[in-house]
Image (cartoon, rainbow over all chains, first blue to last red; front, side, top):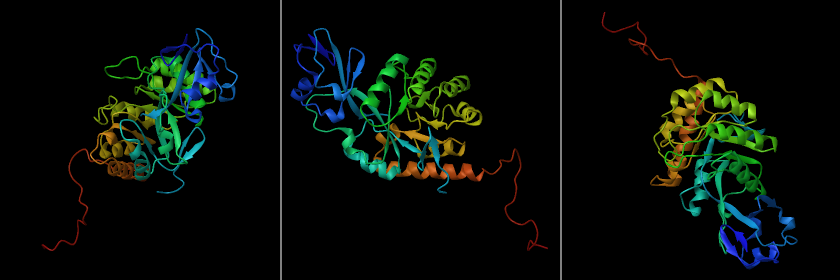
Length: 64
Length: 257
């Protein structure tokens, strides 16, 4: 299982780029952290999700 | 305002001394708020992204406005550093407002953790603007840690109570070389004006606008108050008599003799 933003998904073996596209994330507006390390956008295509990975997909929202 | 009166933060120059928050109001009001505030810096938060999100706040912020992501949600330095790095990865510059709170009731900033995060992020090249509880010793530590400005709270965040910490903010203004930007708790334009008269470098406001009846109109009121306070500070305030009175009119040439 792969944990993304606190939820578990069956995604091992998929690329990060594929997951983001299927989930309809706008890659210009997000940043991704995998197991505590930032994944640069240039590596989305070659990043293969593994069992036990933990990801955060974040964006800007209104705030003070 | 004299165009030479610029606010310099981390080597970047700004004409506006009003930093605008973007929380707790409609994205559709952001452009009007920025324009009516004449703001050049706007704060943002970083949160988990939703799938299939149709709109993003960045689509609503006018071009040329400097984005100041905050680290809200961070409970310690490590979490703040993590959020700051993610914010930078979002591709909108090196500015970060450090905001670290251990307490959810009063939302008071943790100065010790804020100093630690400032040191780490300044070394990584961030323009670090720490939100802090107004304490001179902590402010000096923030300067030494590489902060680009110091952002003391005026009152509990979101309270609109005004300059509750006035005496301690004045000490920071008097003793710290960096811009002192009064951050949380300012509720009215008159309070923003007073902070600027005291010598604050800028004002950050969010809730005062978000809870106002007409947000863009209040943004405009704050802009005018901040400009008025700045001009008053630059002009040098008139003295206050400890007792008695002093006539403004000539004390000669009366018509009575």
